[in-house]
Length: 462
Image (cartoon, rainbow, N blue to C red; front, side, top):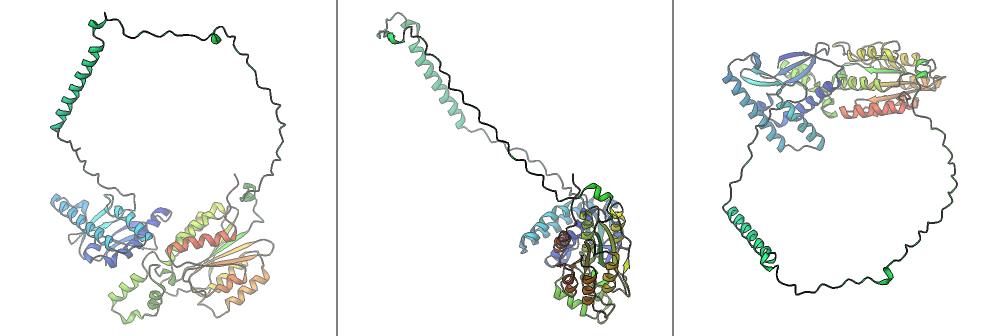
């Protein structure tokens, strides 16, 4: 597989990052159902260079050339025809696929984007490859069809002739009754006399009787209900938040977080048990690329964490604890509301180490609890992880019980990406909850539930 192009990634553009995840889901859905030739027109995106760039790859071999650099109009015409043929093949294949409503919506929304004129086209050994722009699709304007003018019917003249005859007949009837030669004839009918009954002559008008006036009913003053307190925080509380709750996010940054969300649990378990050294280098690389393709646990968790931070109320200071390698977790200071962009930037740059990557979860919970009060005020820890500690043999359930005894108002919620239930005791001991999320949609929903359960997402009072 070779790289065709490389573009800078703007992780703050949440819409494009969401489209990137959708596009990877589309590729995973289409690949098993398309021929290799039809699928080859779709370039494969990968985040590279510390996630700062998006690389576009293809399985085709040859020197890539941008279609915009080709001057031969005949070649451009042939490429356009080839693209149209391949896209038609994709549309025919989609019609034969058994799709649920969510998959049908995904495919229907992306077919116009594949056809968009705003995409960049590359040629690899004469074969076209589409690099998606992730912009609004620009479709060619349909050729206007001239209106069809119906030929004048022969019978239309007969209708006009009949209408003219009817008009002539009507004029003849009117002429007979109103002809001036009939004016000397005396009328055969004697006009009747109009007799006015005497009771109607000079009768005085009846007096106008006004209805009796109704006394106005007394106005009863309704009691004014007392204003209900809004579920919001005052601006004064944001400015003076010395006693406000605080929060620590524990983020798993281990190598297992790079596993894809597009494979089943059994396929992931099989991959983890497989000895890649027993395969050829090309087979191992292809297998690894398949099982770590986007959207993976890390990319989806980071995206949702960034949006979650925006929903946390402004008087809550947030610290970050990352689980990257043994023996201890890495801790930051607290970020107030005005500095949350720095916190989001730090999460955005998280990337597991290629070697010595592990999950020091015991250390992470221990350090996070020391940053919080949990005695005189409600404090919170949100854990985003796909497993348990693999750096120490210390019992993490015992640690959680000790924290609950010393800090009874410290609550720990867990978003379990792998659904292994290995650290449920941490949430149960501290009065928190465990939320299982094994696909991009579940991660969004469960992260929202985890924060909503903490009751720290109130807006500013208007």
